[in-house]
Every structure is written in structure tokens, then in C-alpha cells.
Length: 417
Image (cartoon, rainbow, N blue to C red; front, side):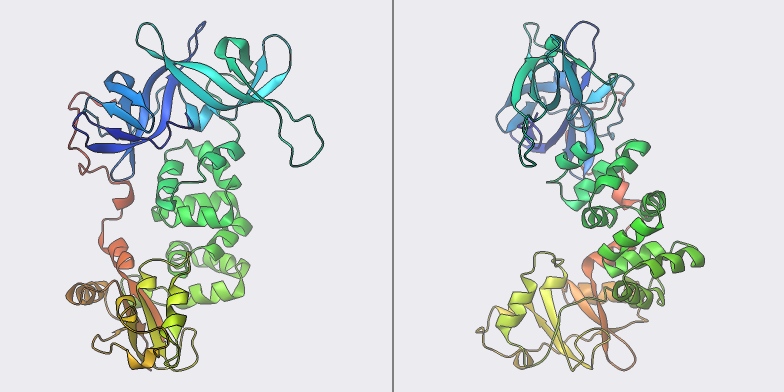
């Protein structure tokens, strides 16, 4: 499974359909679990079920199908177990009495009838050394060589599951978490780091954000809000009662809370309510080299990295008077020592904090921009609105979980699973 997870799924013509995210098995009384299908992520970050009967080939790095996929969202049925989400990390005992081990990987193989079954297990035994960095020895075993400590279907440890999600992008992690059962979702949320969970929450609908933060308790919720982008944190807090909002703001780091408080004073459908208060701000004397060094930071959102804003001091929002914008592409046309003040683009006006979302969207579209400066009545820079902020507002509220037909080029029109 470690090699299969993430493999690309193709149709017979070589068109890409999605990626394998899990393998679904069912337990049998005297035989190894039988594979019934794959969980495949298709465009739109939607997990769907692909029956193993529609898989014609499983090879290194790729899975070939008949080309028919039912695009309804995957929902586990009773008795089904997901290998990655539920089986890996489970403790098993050797039937010969030699102790126990933890399942670290599972092999699936085709039997003589052409069906896919769980074959060998890759196991790690308890460590024998007291050294904190030592790991236990590993071994292979067949399903018949071991018995489970837990009953079939009981989930693995949340810590192990978090490890399997380490390579997922925030949007994919959010989608994966929301597909978990309620109790399991909260267990995993408890184990995720504040930064990782904050990234995932930013990709979820606000109702889910509030539900998860509420279940984690005020102190942990405040820590996670500290890690979120100020505009995303403000959007969440705006949905709470005034007392709840104030309590969480008091628990947050003072600097982070100050940024969020500033955003909360604006209406949600205005430039002030849509903006982030942490754009890149530099002086007119700063050089192209300095600006490029700042936008190289890996944690910076791509839309915000597309431009820097040049102002008079101070250089933290609210800044001094806004002088103009220097776009990334323009910087590439000048030598590293060129001063930003000499290459400012002052042809595009900033928008006031009171501008409506529609006005901001119109400006971005008219000038093919990915971000625009937001100013107050004194022409001070207070933030920037990026194209993703506007899209979040303009798209339907349920767009993150929308089950449209954008991925239905290869649709099985049979009954939903």
C-alpha cells in the first residue's frame, strides 16, 4: 500500500482520472481480508469509490481501469475497512505466542481466482534497546500468522494516521479530515500540530471550522487561530457570539489578536473584510534584490508574493502613505540593485476599505491583477485583497464540498454506491 497510495489512475486511453488514496477491504472469517475497491481522489478533491472489478492492471506507479468511475462521493459501508486510514498502525499478536507487533504496511496480491486479497504484512516489533532513537526490528508475516488485538474495523492510533497525512497539501488534508467519522476526525485534529491544523481549517467551510475549534477547547482554539491567516481567523470569529469571540481574542497572542480585531471592524462584503493585513511592504529605497528575497519565503501565499507595496514609514499596517505597487514580473526586468521607488507602478488605483467585493473583483479582472492594495481615508496601506479572497466570497457557500459534475468525463451511470 505504501507504493500504491498516491499512484495515478488512468483509463485505457491513457487519460488521467485521479490518484489512489486508499484501499477498501472486507474481513472474512477464515481467509485474509478481500479487496473490494480503491478510494480514488478525482478532480475537485473528491474521494470516490472504484470497484476492484473495474481495475484491469496494477503496476508500479499506475493503476489502469476500464474508464468507468461513479463520481458520487465515497461513503464506507458497514464491514468495510480502509487500509491506510484504519489498518496501518494496528497492533497484532503472533499466533505462535512470540509477542506482538504493529502493522506498518500491507501487501495486496491476486489469488488464483483473480481476486485481490491482503497478502503479507510488514510488521515492526517492540524495540529491544533503551536508546530513544532506536526502532524495533521488522519482519514479514502472512495474515494467518497473526491475530488482532482490536476487533475488526477498529481504527489505528491517531498518531499513526497523522503520519500518513504528512505529505498532503492543506486542501487535500481538509478534504480527507472531513471524510473521517466524527469521533475520528476530532482524534486526528487533537494530534495535528497547530500550524498543520490551521492550514487545513483555512480550506474548510466555516461551519466545520467552528465545530472543530469548539470541540478542541478555547486554549487550543486560540493557538490555532494564532497560526491562521488574520483574514481567515477573522472570518471564523465573526461567526461566533460577541462573548465567545472576545474570550478567544483574549487568549490569542496580542499581536495576532490586534490584526484580527482590526479586520473584524469591517463588513464581510467589503475590501476591509476580505483583505489580509500582512502584505509585503517596503520603502522606496529598498532594492529589487531585497524585494525578491522577501517573496521567496516558502510560507508566503503565491497571490501575495506577486507584488510588493511601497509606502512611507512605518512599514507595518497601517503604514505611512501608500506610494504604489511593484509587481513581481516588473522586478525581473531590472537589475538587483535598482531601487523600488524608481519602478513603481502607479497606474492602478488602490481600493478604499469600504469598497464592495464586486468593485474589488471588477478591478482585479479589468487590470488582470492577482492582488490590489487597500487603503484607509488617509491613504495609508491597511492590507491587500488577493484574487483567492474574492473567489472565496463570490463562490457559493458550499463550494468546497460541492459535488458537481466537473469530473464526470468517465461516469458510471449505474446505481450510486
